[in-house]
Length: 42
Length: 555
Image 1 (cartoon, each protein chain N blue to C red):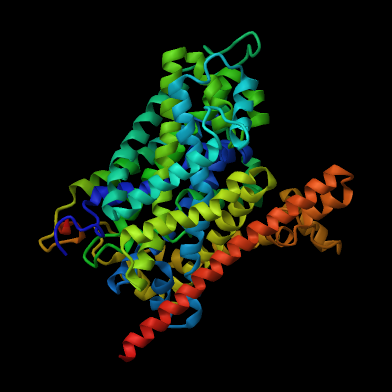
Image 2 (cartoon, rainbow over the protein chains, first blue to last red):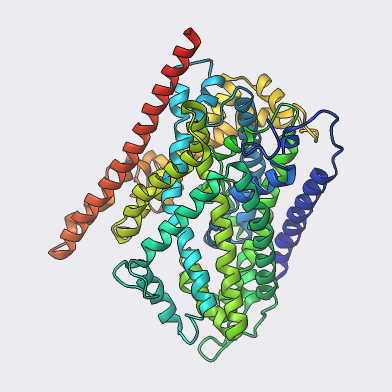
């Protein structure tokens, strides 16, 4: 692959993958609140 | 509300997967790579990411916040969500009609594409494409679209698959949010799995697909072409409009379905983190996976020159089944099932989202059950969708896509961005977004919401309204400056409205050609009449619902 393509592609793919994993990890690990939320109905 | 409530989200992950599924559609795999190739390759990603930051994320927050705010007041569709935010000005609830209308109009033709993926999954599993050459696979698609021809022996095959698809959607919708969530919980992981397998195969294809007919074929050339920046394209307004449009469609903004899904959340539920998580999940599928399948595989077998000339939405059905056969009968069939299976999951998670605003509206205002709402939605899809199946070649499909799936989205999103920041007020709006948030929302998004997002949307709308010939904006401004007027493109909203392009074709056509074009004009106007009838019909329902509400308030 040519260098100019790599310069755009690698940071973009790493950035998007990184943010996706980070935000989803945060969703899974955020401390649960004491009061019931919308999901407690089910 | 008791356990197993049909109209509540079961889990937070289920909600995020359903929201991501709403956004992830066929366009992630088919539209994005084609847009990138046509708009500067790797340089396209720069305006694309800028638009994601300035348009996509703010609008996601706006739509999630509007939904949760509306749900708190018992509103699960946009007419009365907008009404409650718009200082009770009568106009807003009718602008909110777009949030139901667009979903039904888009679902009517989207279910047809979804039915192609369903049929092609079956054909791939049955080995229909084995032994076919490239031309035969391409003509198979044309035969499939012709209702007179049956590829399986089933009469009126595309109609049968379309109706099956609508029935499946209606049945799941009838189960309420619980049904939608279950489909997302199964469909999204399957989609990711299939896409990762195909992307891995594509990027490791190298030059192994080269043949005597295409000796220079290389998958790496495809990836290079997709990502090599042509920086001069950054100065072209057309590229920025294309990037803004892509962000818009890929995130399912301006549809009204995000508000509907979010309206089942409570004040203490986070929306800021949920919205960015679902948004980035969509970006991952689009940029990381969507960019790594179609273009590299096509370039790997047919060469880069072929891709440059033929990159289009149709490649998914007209070319990919042929290329998969090169992996052998078993792997080829498996790849076909995975490819069309992932497109099917991408499609159904989006079409289900399109049904929920109507079901929610009819339940809120007319006390209809989920099942009644869902089956009436299905009935409307059949009435509106059948013309797209039967008169596909007469332009009905394209007409729905243009007015329902393109222009309505931009109009509605522009209106909601102005409503949220300027009528409802940025202070209250910001409070809504940050309420119960699990992340700290950067404060620089406040001025973005107030100025940048509405201005960008107005520019996108204006860009579509007066797009110049050959999308040459610089040339158009020069022409205007020189006193030669604005060279309006036949693709602009104004020209489309008056069928300028079609009238020009009719004027120059002779004999049978002119008759065919005149018939096409009739079908195009017929499609518009159907869409207009749908819009007016929903307006009448909103008017009746509003009158009922007023009556109840007095009583």
